[in-house]
Image (cartoon, rainbow, N blue to C red; front, side):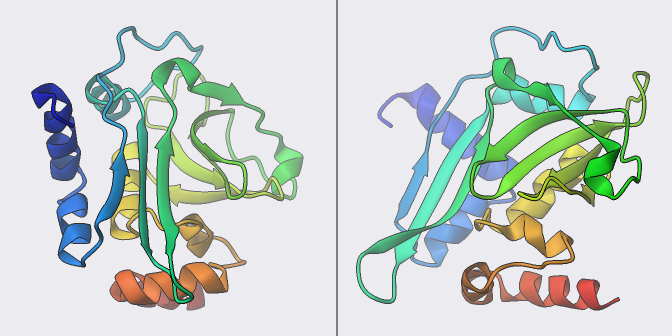
Length: 202
């Protein structure tokens, strides 16, 4: 973190994430690991065109690898949140089968930029090859797709208000967040948890 350019990346991320890092520090969180990366060196070469906000993001950060920890009830520390966007070269098109969503057509193609083995993956879902405004969906571990946001920027804001807490995407599925995620959300972002609960009841 002694390199001025690398330190700047952390500052820029704090700005684009609506002061998320600063907010966590204000809560007394001292274990915040942020892998400062330069912007992607080459453009994406996939079959579908990335939206302008995605291109702008990856031109500043070639992916994101951030995690923060808090003291666990039984002692020690526990990883509460992890934000892991793939490097641009690793952003890939993934299968998007209608059968995975009870026969309902979600879209024409999915381009995954965020994936967690124990959670699921997040992807841009295109209606067709000419779609310039793909929506963001979450694919859970049962391979079902769930709508999250109308754009990458809107999704990133959702991620920020949930502080990247592990499993937060499940708030937008019929299952809902698990008890552990609910506990951490009630402690660190109670307003968001309340909003998610109200939205699920509608």
